Length: 456
Image (cartoon, rainbow, N blue to C red; front, side, top):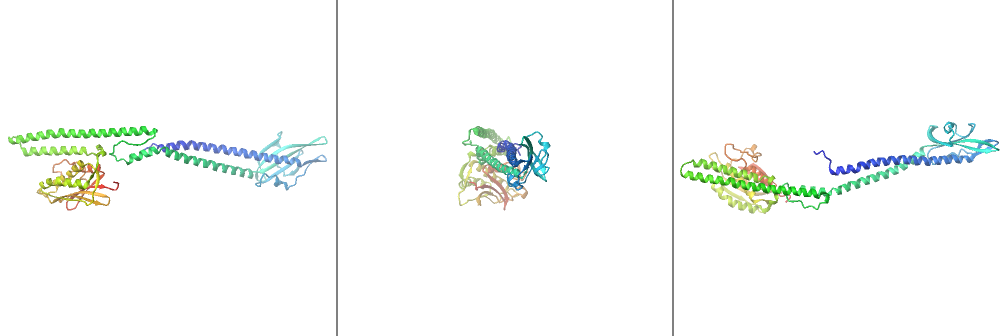
């Protein structure tokens, strides 16, 4: 598995990572800003309430008195949440009204007012204290007004505001992520299209890719097309090379055979043995060249043409029947009523059937080397597959060899001569046509080429 991230994941990470950092910073800024603004608002309200209490302080007989009913406590609260505590103390530390020990004069000192948090009556409270003065008969009297409010109201307000803002921010983040995801997906769509085009291609289809690509990947498509063109040129070169080698090898072998025949007329050579060697060399050369020619990695699939398999097999049967009869076998052809169309190279199909039938001619014999029975070529349909079968009536082969007879250089009878490439070439040609091969015993040996017509 590749350790590199996909372009999609890289883009999404590049977008979501800074967005996440920005979202966290934004939430922190909002949190502290809301805390500050709400607390400032409640502090102003608390101080305004405390200032309003100045109006209830009077001087009677040179003493400070307060006209503040206890029922006013509820009215002093900024909302219905929590409790309010208050006290008014004169400069002699005498409580004029309210709750004891609420004032902490040491915190006020020389300040006009002072806000602080503390705990009173078992509750957390926000307190404001300030000093006020009243004058009467030339004498100034001082009073300390303190009012405290429990924190439930401001905490509830802060939580409600933060919850609403967080929901808005979360909605924006989710929307942005979704937009980013679809934007990245849309941006990468040309690459997905190119990937789909390539995946639909057969591995042997080397025709250039025709794709209206955006500028960003146009160079990639052009580079791929250059590689495909070079691959096709390489295949053509290999095919030409095989053709040249075939010509260069066949010519001296033919000349050597002529010279041996001339020598035979003069009784200078053992003609039979030498001719056998020459024929073997010719056969092996032909098989090696055919093996190279049918290698799926060196074939351009654009050479395949649509053919009628029935007509092809009929023509082939007419041409091969005489050869089979000459070898002492009977020959039969069993056609299919419906016409079957496949993408194929007729020359390669002919070579494939030649190798299968030559294998039958070679091995379908008794202990004394006499031919056994009939060789049958047939076409059958099984659901979405077409089976092209070659059956002989020989002894068949052992079950353990059925899966290995298509391997390179594998021979059932190692004592017999041969290249060991014949059935491997059959397998290569079948693969080239998107088919597969199968061997089974059924009163002889049946070799089947199975074409899958499901996607045709």
